[in-house]
Image (cartoon, rainbow, N blue to C red; front, side, top):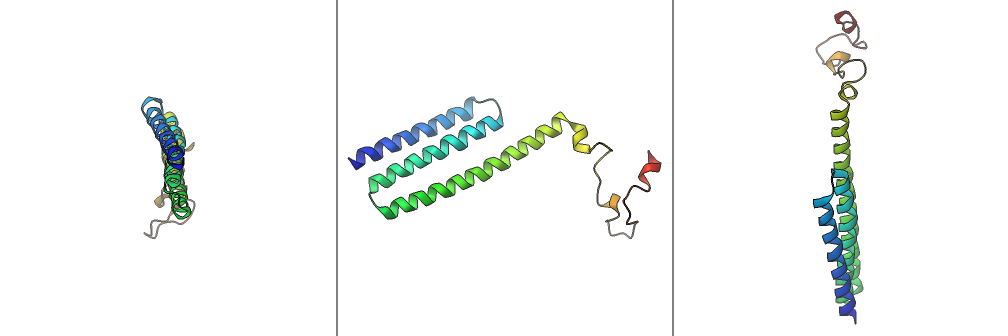
Length: 133
């Protein structure tokens, strides 16, 4: 009976992995793809590991499987967040170039603030900038 339940859970996990792969291939933008992958694949991995733990019948193996699943969920969450943040910043730069350079001109550099270490003025950096405009 335990082997049958384990096999059903593993097949259910494989079904979720397949759904995540279909989402990766069919969804239109990166954020939707990430959502499909993180949700479906993490759930699929959980079902597969639960099925394997049921088939093994050991509490120690079950604990190791839960630990593996938690580490995979944490890693997928962090990587998906980083990729979504990069995508959002890329979209902001493409859609709004004035946002990237700021409302008052190009972004300030350490040299414009007198932080270059060359003994320049250490003021706000705008003393010479206003005369050039």
